[in-house]
Length: 208
Length: 289
Image (cartoon, each protein chain N blue to C red):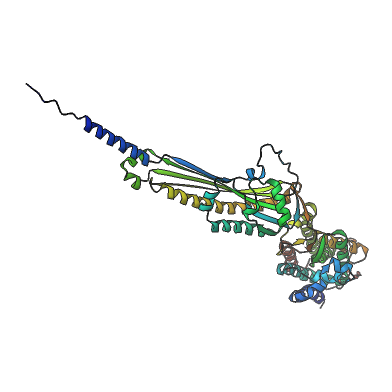
């Protein structure tokens, strides 16, 4: 049951929207429209994808990691998504003045991977190894973009579409800030075995 | 006693000598001397047409992605253009341009590529001509294709057989050599910087008879242009890949920025998704600590 939100939010919903391209104009992150008062686009723009492969990788990756995070901390995924989606959009409005439109879940996705990595790191045993591996993997994904701006040369099906490193960095930053600011679990040190219930979830900590 | 004077052979001897001389001259005239020809269009002649012009100082290019690329044959200086047009079929020329255009289109960093008619380029037009193209056609980067073809036709020692006249129709003692170099050079128009170049080469050698030599040279010329164009296509793909790697590995080689008005997209890449999946599998396979 706990996995349903992630499957719907990151699996079914973006696929449904991809099947209804006539609605994209009203939902896409569009700088001019947002500044004209269409604020829902701050949320909805993330669920619009520019190509089938773009949709495939984002939906595949996020359904999986989202379900994993939900299994560990029910509710955290939706809270993070609800808060981070508009903040990433606002960040893009401020930091990427040349970007007119934006679409894609990966800004949110990188944040979810960060939260999953931190969550697993706080767990004992093999989970921690997996958590460290997840964070290293994410670092390997983001650092080249950060250092060399290689995202500019990333391949999209449509040449006029450019990968946005800023969205990934904002998603990561918001997850880290959220982690320290109260979007539990926080990176406050490992939890001992007796703090987990039978299903492996922390007993003493509650998301938000 | 009256003796008869010996018959005079002088008129006959003169006639024979004259006939032999005519034959020699005639046969020698038939035997064409070794010859060579040269056809070319030159990037240097186009970009730097006068010696007294100061060299353009290239700057570090600023590439605004996605790029808009123009593609054209460098105009010929004139003397070889006719031969080039005859021997390099128009259809193959279009094929070459389409091949090159398709390779550029496959790049993530290229928005569109326009094939520019040669009439838009003036011989010796230089960067001023490219600036005009930039304004007229909205291209940032230009890919110019130039060619250089040299042909030589040499008789070997056995060509003495041509003296028999019939030998010049039968014995392939004439050696034809055709060497072609095609080159695609890609310039950033604003900074006057050479981004990269790709060569295509071809050498064709054959032997033929004296009488068939001219036709064979024309055929060799066409074949050599086509082979060089194929080689150019292959090398261009390699150079385009290298260029992208160079942009990644040497960011100081070019400033890269987004063109205003672009669409951004965030994507988790395939390898990253696969990595996450592997970690998940590892956790699933070993569920307890």
